[in-house]
Image 1 (cartoon, rainbow, N blue to C red):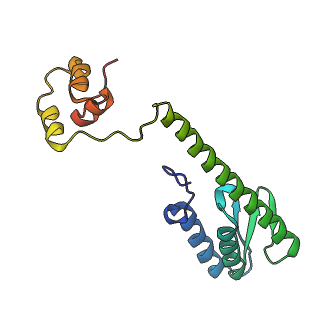
Image 2 (spheres, rainbow, N blue to C red; image 1 turned 30 degrees about the vertical axis):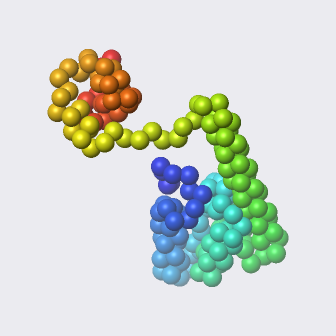
Image 3 (cartoon, helix red, strand yellow; image 1 turned 45 degrees about the vertical axis):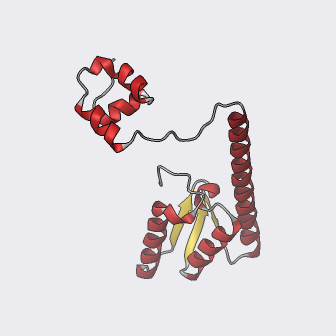
Length: 164
């Protein structure tokens, strides 16, 4: 599982890259058994038709089977290829719709003054001052107000946990 990002681009999908490398080595070492890469959801495997085609062709060239759920699909078979291409098109369509909806929601929120994007960090000098001059953990609200940041920012800078 790749965690911490959306995975809409291939550049940071290390878990998928590791799985593809593992099945490639397993297929090269296999003599009598078939190697299969299985995923539970196609849209987590490939985000668009081009990516799906590239990965599935690469698997087929290495004699690696592709499993989706409990079914095995052959990229060389015309019906299997059609089905997998259809799934890839739907995954790409869903990702595009999600992107458009997100942008639309952000534009509406921005128009209402509710979405301003990521807030800037306090300058380094202010962070040093906050860190040095953190006398009372109960005073984090006034520090946050003084520097126009959230209380969680004060906690991150000082390395303290909020008091319950």
